[in-house]
Length: 300
Ligand code: GDP
Image 1 (cartoon, rainbow, N blue to C red):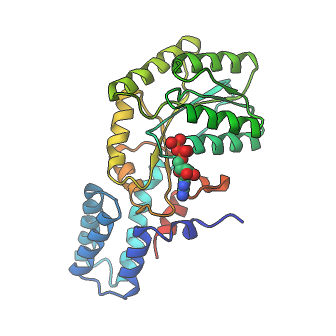
Image 2 (cartoon, protein in one colour; image 1 turned 90 degrees about the vertical axis):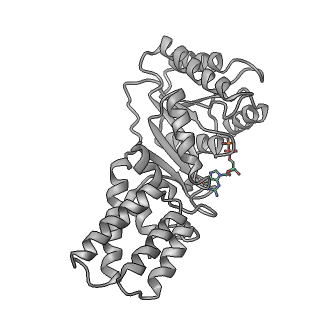
Image 3 (cartoon, helix red, strand yellow; image 1 turned 45 degrees about the horizontal axis):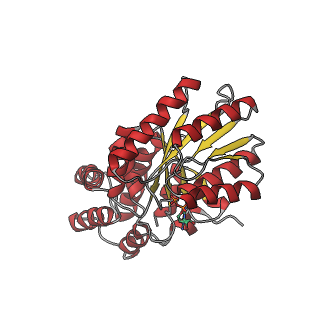
């Protein structure tokens, strides 16, 4: 069956180190607050979010609001939830926007292609008709991977030869999805070109060309971030936001070697909606982001 968030997140540095810290039944003192701060920073929560969280807790300790470490943990849970609640905004597919155009962006290796497959299956299960556009024309393997996946799952995939123009592939796909009255078009894009400006120019062109057919498209630009990349994730969001604009995030690979905390750092830094998180490699492991399930899965 479907694994719980806790089972999936148990291996993270966040869960392990916090668990170790509180299992020692520590005294509620400055040393505990210091250790908590170190734990958060080490778990990728980021300096800004970690110091602010602990400083707020310190003030409450100094005001004698808590007597013991257990109460501190309860207050920490509330503070972490407050940080994530505003970004836990599920993706809403607007039926009037037909097709609803979902543009997937992110650097290579983050799990973009597998996420596209998982999303397409999810939408299919909701009885929506999906089409894919193989817009990562820079990687022949990515085009093949999407085509094979589409054949296996009866999802049409629009592609052109490798090295073709991504904006043209996605434009054709939108025209085709329109004439077939499909519900959702998911467009893949390159995660790397010869140069950084090459990539950013290409994304800009895709947006302009889509806008010629449908001024409201893309309806969602989903940036896929690898949860194991730590603070580098912050730079990736900055770059893609500047290049094309980002309306939502998917954070993958939070199971396994991820430290777990990058989700908080992203929430604090950008406040962008986190639509989905990846808790493993199977279809069921792409979860709609649930702030409470996530926080409770990390805390002892
Ligand atoms: P792309 O280069 O961004 O298209 O990356 P892929 O979709 O090919 O994924 C790269 C690897 O990451 C694959 O082996 C995926 O199975 C794996 N992957 C993707 N999402 C997750 C996740 O949430 N958890 C784990 N453990 N692996 C994932």
